[in-house]
Length: 111
Length: 113
Image (cartoon, rainbow over all chains, first blue to last red; front, side, top):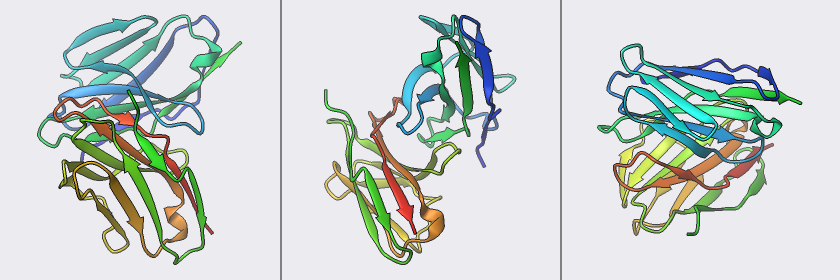
């Protein structure tokens, strides 16, 4: 059973701080990892993808992957109230080619 | 570029009734997913199509749920008969084959009373 685990939160950070979201996965065959943001009542939207070990930066977002530890993280720098949402971590394996989503971490950025 | 289209947006039915949802993926996306998202949980895959073939339906409750994608484009998901625990948002997503990057539709919020 492929599983992706996340702390459900809520994670509260003050405006301007760094928010750190973490995710672990059970299937070592997973090839790719994604972070989706989901606002309340809306559908998930892709914000970051990462395929190889290390860091990947895109604007205020940095994704980190450590395949040996089966660990993925998302850092949000200079957090804004508009970043308040649920962040879903997902793994994807080439052989099955389907996504396994974690339960999501609810982030609240306080003005 | 048009996104993934779903309808209806909302549906309220009584238990034991039937309901159907429709999805039109992004043009050119051969892979189509149906997910069920219960409030407070992450999306759970129900079924994955590649063109008009089923890739994975291991978590689809086949005694009451069915899905088809006859011409490899649009898809319908049906529930018959519905149970109270089927109340959820049903999300359709699509992607190019082998990319792993999925785009979601707005979802259909189903309430079973």
